[in-house]
Length: 229
Image 1 (cartoon, helix red, strand yellow):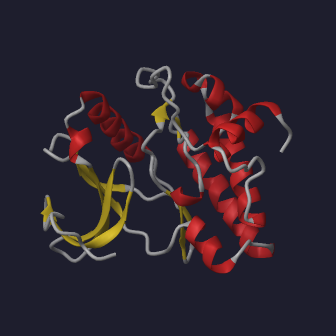
Image 2 (cartoon, rainbow, N blue to C red):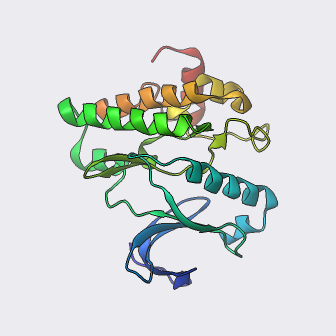
């Protein structure tokens, strides 16, 4: 994606090359170090950078990703959570998201689906054995690299021992891929919640639809809580 007017030319020692994507909380750029190494740099939007609670969440995300290092995750290379606009650089993974892959090629089957599922299982194993719960496993947070999927974006993840930043009344997650316990009491979720999300994600990869999909996120959340897949 082309750079926009006002995008930074550099962050830390990394020269910004282009945009990889943007969301409600920040922008992700492709950048290069002086040695030529490519990284993905996530930068927080200015309106959130002034929020101390959001900064605390971003520091938590950095800490979570630093703890996780496996074949199917993207490790942190560098970060500055105290910058005017906090940023985090992770290994650049060439490849589109699972959501984009399915839009382009349709549902998966056979060895391709098995390899996706096994890669995601291994990623969750690496994440959970460090005491981290991802809490937002969804098609947009899985990158399809040539050698297997990569789980990214720990924006709402939490180390299992840290319960302080999940605020009552704030839905943290994506309803079609959330577990019932995440919807009912987000502060109590553990690794099993990610496993539930993994099941929904594999159904989506195999069929193009989640097991609880509706046109309304509220009705979807109700189905997750109350109905069979």
